[in-house]
Image (cartoon, rainbow, N blue to C red; front, top):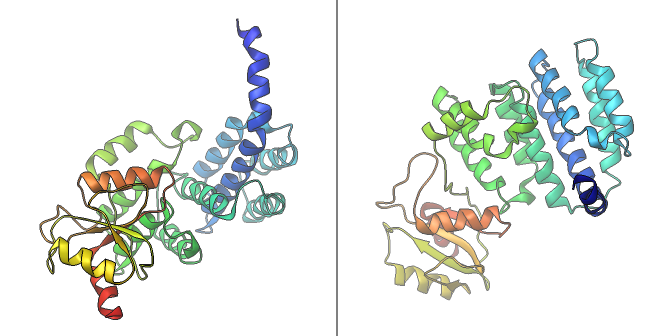
Length: 305
């Protein structure tokens, strides 16, 4: 039965091979950058990189992995991954992927971000340098705003770094959220059991974006919760007066979900509710939808009127 099905599998992989190959390159770029972002490479990170290669052994005969995997294997063969070796691997990844137009810029960079997160968490610890390097990457890729999970990570980092002190709870919140974007099956060091326990303790669901600009012209808004400043009908009228549209439900046309700041079950990092859950699920499925705290919404309104 297996032999009978094999041609179908082979034919399927012929169609998916370019996608799989380019996605793997983008993720590997991120992993290497994440491992190297604190300028310290330890044994656990070497094992993580090695394990990732084993998980992608099916690509070892395909260009560029026929050059890339031997380079990685040689780099960690002595048990020491030098910064120069990591830089060579990253250069090779950049060199190959820069010629590829299989994915658009947004998709490629989100794939890189996923790899970056994996690299940062490769040894199971997120240190301060890695957090600041992640924030720096986010800062220089603000064209990804509106794309999941860019807004969520950006907002978390701003909240965590706001007072200049990174507490254990803040580090755990960040670890719990970032772990959602790592395939633990491709990890040597990370335990799905430990991460699930952490996520149960530090649940982070609907995270409001740090929103500095809102495009009202022709875009659809929804509101959830209770506002400290106006009734929902008044909010709808303001939005419509600025060229926007208002709908009481989150739909495929919703561009902004405004979260009321009065009585909404929010804490430092996230907020909850049916509409927020719907918005998060739509973001995960690729819809450009920004969750905005009403404080930011009113700041923008005050600047416009």
